[in-house]
Picture 1 (tube, rainbow, N blue to C red):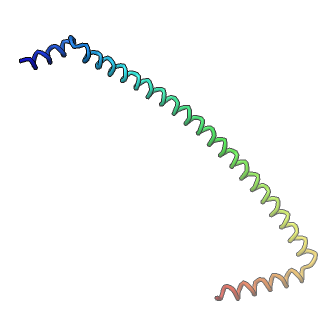
Picture 2 (spheres, rainbow, N blue to C red):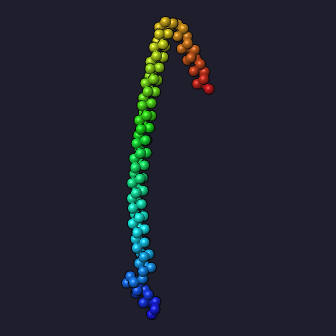
Picture 3 (cartoon, helix red, strand yellow):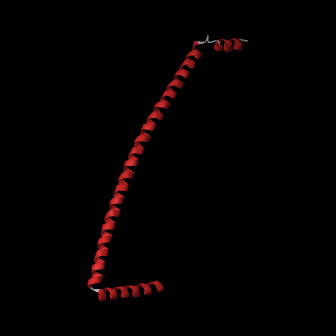
Length: 111
């Protein structure tokens, strides 16, 4: 019977040690919940910062790619103009080079 009276007294809140443990447990739960919210907020801030950094980097890469395409386009136009000028100035020599290149390509492709 002594056991029954102890469990009854502890459930009635007459045992200060159990009440203190329950209060501390509640306090710890609240603090953990607050910490979880704080970490979630910090994680959201970090995610926002990382997203902004990634967007900035993507923009930089896109701009760099656009510059590269523009440069390559200019170089291709320049090379095309040089070839056109050379063919107009020296048509027989250009025809000979084209025939030789075709002959070499045919030999390489047969293998």
